[in-house]
Image (cartoon, rainbow over all chains, first blue to last red):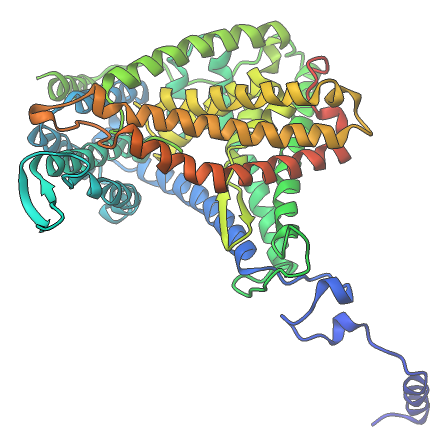
Length: 326
Length: 231
């Protein structure tokens, strides 16, 4: 129950026709930022989807990096191989596969990839999850190549006799060959990622890069991680503020060339620019920090441990060389 | 626009690897002249920024979105040689650690996006911007217009080169009975397939991304725009 004083105040307040701001009265999702000044603007389906896609890319990066760290720490065949040797092995297998002309030969590389994945204790589900999008994409692209109109040759299946639309033997082999080659290559590349900690993998590659760029390359991964985390924060902050609502659309009429997704486009541009500015400012801070430590002349990036070439390494190099050249 | 492994034959990817190694060597020497040995973290941060920039999805009209390469934006801030090196590193990490792109086709991808994409965009930008980029305030519209044109041109040059490299595979590499061994589609298919999307859609994604990003930098930190004298 309200006291007398409070009741008087209430009457006084209502008597002054005090209005709540329009943005506070507006129902969630019905606020119109342009007319009421409501700070939480309703975005278009398009812009919301774009932000979701960016967030998905960020989360996928973090998830993949974390998963690679996890599988790389398992006790498996490829995990025991020296990272620099592994780079050579992967390169040999990829070059070998690229020179392969027969489907049977390509299948041999796919089988080898499967065996290496199993011996390295890579979870089948995750391996497939990373593999399938690329393979399916290639399959869809390769499908029209089997048609006689694209790859003329001996007909194996006639689709429309009247219009002479048929699947040619050469076309079918070309399409299957492309899918097999891409599948094999992806399997081999993923093996490196799954069985080596990402920073070590980057450092292993930098071993083969001469001079100034070697240090740059080996340092880059850690900064990528740093900036990706900042991007994640940008997006999550925007989501937390409710500054867009994915999936609730509008026509964009009367909002100029940019339509409803214009402000989100601006946001994307400004955030990308912010990250660039952040990286440029950070590099100045780094420069000062290095000067303060007396390291102004040269940056030394801790590399990989001393190179070792054991039994596993030798066996794997021989296996890869055999698969590639025999 | 990334060409995965398996689409290019050894003759093509070998040539592009050789070309890229030579170009990266030249870039390393060029940058060494302007940067100190202690500037390695600066380029590493640029590479990281390039990697993150490629993650952004830009909403465009008509319910679609696409991701930009950021070639022009990077060149406008870091300069063309540094942008080329940074994009090359970002593409290498994408291909190697995350399996996005290809290892054998890395040379071609790098040549298309990091070299041709950056330098063609930069050439048009400098031609159109003239001294506007150095003049700073009051000349921003011209700089942004030049950057937009450069971005559109750069990404389309990169797409055209990608289409060419893919389209010549059936001519260069054929197996028994004349079947294509790598990408099976000829130039008359690859050029329209890639250019249609880039001329009408992804080119404008790149323009929007570049112009909005550069406008923000010109407004908040104009001193960071590369003029050739401030690095």
